[in-house]
Amino acid sequence: MYEGVVQSLIDELGRLPGVGPKGAQRIAFHLLGSDPADLRRLAAVLVEVTERVRFCRICGNVAEEEECRICRDPRRDLSVICVVEEPKDVAAVEKIREFRGRYHVLGGAISPIDGIGPEDLRTRELMVRLSDGSVTELILATDPNLEGEATATYLARLVKPLGLRVTRPASGFRSGGTWSTPTRSRSGGRSKDGGCLMSSAPGAHDGGSGDGWHPLAQRVAGQARDFLDGVGALASGEGGDEMVPLLLLEVSQILLAGAQLGASKDVIPPGNWEPDVGADPDLDVLRGGLAVRLAGCDEYGDLFDPYADSRPTRFRLSDDLAAVAADLIHGLQHYEAGRPLEALWWWQYSYVNHWGTHGGAALRALHAIVAHALLDVAEEVTPG
Ligand code: ZN
Image (cartoon, rainbow, N blue to C red; front, side, top):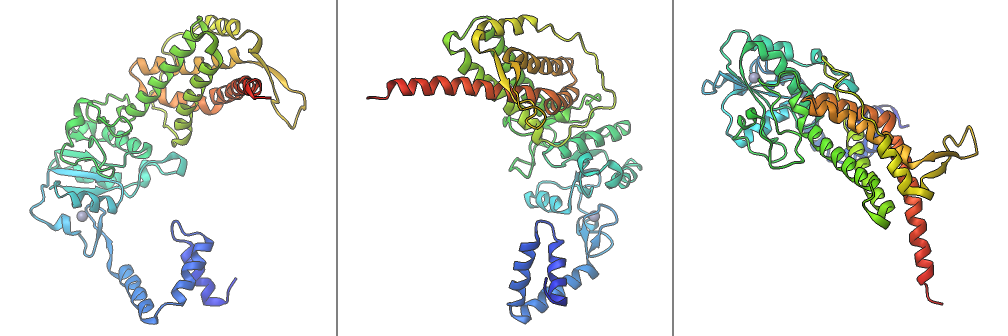
């Protein structure tokens, strides 16, 4: 703690985003050591900003007058609105100089985990702008992440009754994508970059299926199918002596898919969730095949809860792998029924609650077997 005004300065700096207590202290002492003239200039700018800058009453962009420079510009196309999250996104699109319409700044994105819902964004203001019929096209350029996708999906549904042309840029302007093809995604075409979350339009043809989430759902669906194919083949006798290392690979890869889901923000379950899209699969054949093929190393001991019981509980790799398969298949059923958002939600939910634990335990057991085998071999070949 420092005396009076120095501590106040540190406290104020510490409230800035990305500045921790140590950073605040460092900046404060940097400022105190600077030329007083520099400091006065900084202070003057801060005062000027608070007094002069406000938000455009039309679009929500930063402005020095009641309306921003873009909204005042008579050359802008009044029939197109590009929806973005923050004023800095306006600047990013303007830099590319291809968009001639106007903007609508939402002031963020829908994020249930942070408690931000549609009512916290400037959605009502957007609906007011659209109500007189002069706007015929809406471009949803929210960020290429899950929150941005959720927001775009929400807005696409909200404006659907208005019959506008609704598009979503095929690739994010932030990630270096081109701004010149904002309508390409209408047909649901995917970008070449498989890693880009922003490749299909949660637009006019969405039909409530949550197409905006489709790329991530599609990726996880592919990983789930690979896992099921691989483990199924091993259960039926393929793989020979390499059974355990191949299983280790399969489990590692599906846990990577799980980690992608775990590292994503909450997938918002669709309102019209359809819990039953077919009978759950009978996995006894898979389980039995794995048990037979793993023979002596199917069962393993693990400390289920090291605090409650010091004796390891017995588990079976075949049970763990069947449990992972069951959750993946359940999601795939939703996915294949054309409901990717449901699938994604299920995969994420069940990863956190169920199959991530089984997969993690199986990974440890398989790793122990592989390590044991490799270390034994290493000992044998050691000369002397
Ligand atoms: Zn404006």
